[in-house]
Length: 202
Image 1: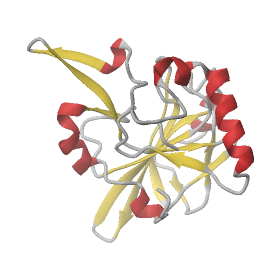
Image 2 (image 1 turned 90 degrees about the horizontal axis):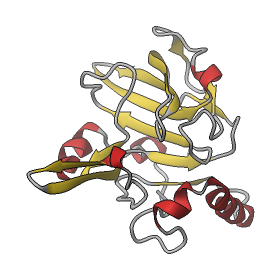
Image 3 (image 1 turned 60 degrees about the vertical axis):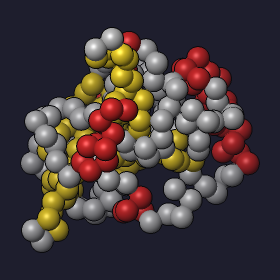
Image 4 (image 1 turned 45 degrees about the horizontal axis):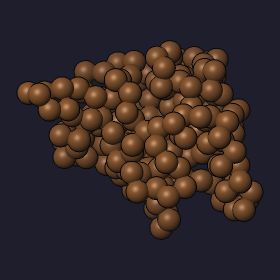
């Protein structure tokens, strides 16, 4: 799915944030590709992040937080989400901000002496909070379910999936979109999630 500034099928913030309109467009595409999951978005620069939440002014110039750090999987509400690898729950929280994550779970994965984190955003509040810090989820074990727009930050239902090599000092949140001026730093912190999926289409 192309939601970048070059997208030809979804144009700007108004179309994207008209949830009925955007949801219908996704539904039409999904019906034509019923055996596939609609996905994409890593390092995609998106025009839809145009509100004051996604802009700052530095030395009389505007710096926009518009570069997506994860992959979005466009799936219906209540879709069960499972752990891609065994991991320890280090965050199970709720982000009630407009255009926030809604229900959010972050897992820590350890492989020999190496560890990294996976983030699952836009979950239903109840299912996200069923997790407890310190819980260990096995590979393929259910983490939570996707939430609807009322509780997922006011988005068409989807999973925001992201991997991070550090949590920095975040405990109950983590940026899913980066400022243009900082993108080289964030690329090192948040590598391409497709390293795990290895899908040619992403």
